Length: 124
Image (cartoon, rainbow, N blue to C red; front, top):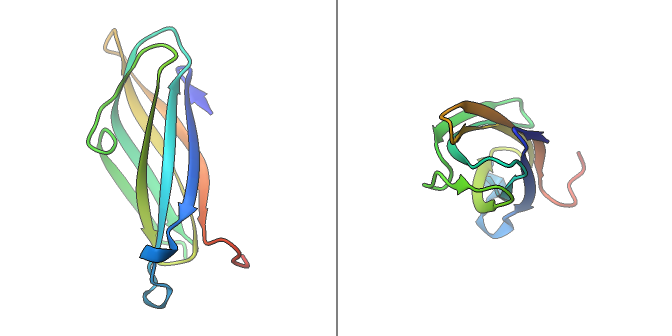
């Protein structure tokens, strides 16, 4: 998915060693790669996440940048980071948007398509 020719790629993994199923604590890591496929330099300003677990509980997260950074992406450049989410259920989903600013000061949103978080080998 892209907006302003910014592409978002996501890879997830379950962190079994940090999870405690008996305490309803399922920890996931996600690695996101953001690629600027446009001919304009843009900077990631803000993030907005919607995290939903299998019980339908929704958490919204808004904040500046990602992992403490507001990366500037030149044309054809990419930025990759890893972060995490903790769910009360073994299955959930995340989606959201990044707010970018181009060199002319225009703000635009880049949707983050929904992706699932799930414990491997779980029956859904």
